[in-house]
Image 1 (spheres, helix red, strand yellow):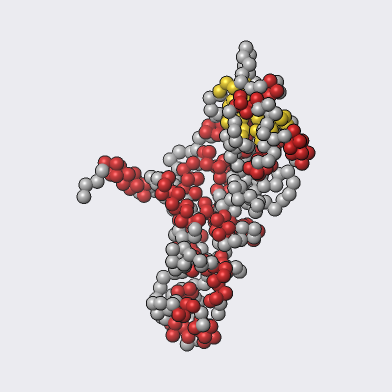
Image 2: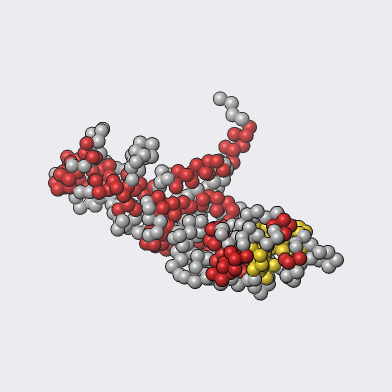
Length: 429
């Protein structure tokens, strides 16, 4: 069958990628180091005619925040924006413009309720919205004063709307230097990492790490701090104005620290802050004996930071959806392969569990029933020598370890009403 030239080119690219040398961990090296200019070089500035109430306050580089007191997204982003304002106060001012859709009373109540580190003005006549064309909140502009002889400010950044996690990126651009931003012990989130490490971030997004938070949400454990500690990048247990800025908060599903991001393995701010850390130690912190069959050597080799080269965005979305539903490949959460023996051999020693099993729906399933080894793994080696332990998927929380085993059969297509939490008591023995 003839192949199109485009397909041949794609196959050649994939062949070259698979033939690339790997280091001792199995990782492919970068073709070149990241270019910090992607962070520190702002786009070409654009002239922007602002109303006098705003332009009269711009005497140096200024962050203009457009908010609405009734916007839930504004409230979620407020702590991060306030933190950015404080962090760059030595080189830039911040001015908040409240949407004219809100009443003066709404604005005054908002200001009274929040300890804001910047002044607030009310766009009551909608002049600011008309001049900028802004119709979504929160939005953020970074502007410079007019050059001599002109009246227009120079807009250097436009985040319409403002994207959570962009604070460190904006600080790098405002300062023109990434080094002061990457502070020891203060995470910045995947969005900031992706500004230079875009290819690695894309591959991460289609991994189990990149969809880790959805696993606990799917199991209705989204508020369980013990689970979240390993399913997010950094869990923030603090309070005050910086809460949520440097870590995940259980009530904030859009946090830039959701999922197991770069800094979970490479430490806060990664190696840029002088402490790159040992990824193997990070693995052991979550992948302990009670949560699967994880092997750190094989696990690290399975992480491919360039594994989505040549993969289309559509295929990438499908991979993420499959992982988010708990159906993607997870070799360290699956049972091993090996010789099996059947339920009658198991019953020779495990009489009480066998009697309990016979009362479960599994014992009445089709195809010779769902026996012991369907859930506990092949028992041939253990039956031949009882001193050989079964490979265990035990966990302090059974839902964490056995979900992958159950969902091999209990898929949404086959069993749409099935739920792990309700099903486990039915097969307990």
